[in-house]
Image (cartoon, rainbow, N blue to C red; front, side, top):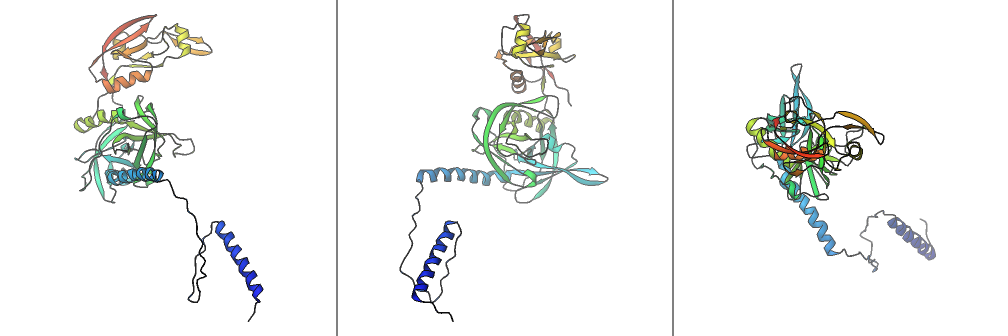
Length: 388
């Protein structure tokens, strides 16, 4: 057996001590092993741990608890929707997305593009229960749809919020099933309001909510929520690159203002009738102002009129010529709409929002137009959009 001198033992102890200190500083934890023969040295190392600010701890804790409570309360009311079609006599799954419980009768709100092409629908609840659902109705213009399922005990509808309470920068939460991963919560903010996004038709969806909360394939149809646990939108679209369908930090939700108008009609009538003006155009811009010598810098320019539409019947005028102005090819000769029912129209979207949220087919509206440098009022009766 090798014997060490007293000096060798002391030197070896020092080397081991500094080796252990170096490992600890590198972030590696050394488990303490104490044998029955080990005697305490009487020396204890005291580590000073900074005391966190109590107010900071409270803020983090409270914020986390809000999200935890919201998820626990609402996740049972967010469902996974599986869509099947019949091919060669067999059911084949063609889609998987999200939806939320709208009322106690078992109506589930989702996107129209989710249910499109389906023959059979299944709803999976948060506890794994799967039930068949029936399609109630869908609306391609708003990309909204309603299916119905027998609700299990304890599952209740999610309350609806209001657009008037929303602000850019406000914290929002999305609950859904991205990539088939059921019951996922993501958090972000409202990054913009009043966006116009494409629908499944030639018409656009106004007043959409833009958010940076992670929304990915499978989140479609799920709720966008405020921190009070109210639905403020239905997640519908994401901004992607051509190489991936994943979220790039920009997602869009159909606004609750559209949901509150369309969904009740889908449930009661099986369809929603959208008002129709019969014009297409764009927002006034500088080259157009110069080319037409307009006395205004804002408004909605009428580019074309639909044959037989309300606007044409009322005598509105569309583009008559095209000229070059500041290097741009500019349409000229059309009317510029500056107000509708006395409400200012600064952009073409302003008119779309007003028609979508404030009017119905058969309603009479008054357009204030600018033609040949002069203002005039034109009254007309709105029609109904033709189904796609």
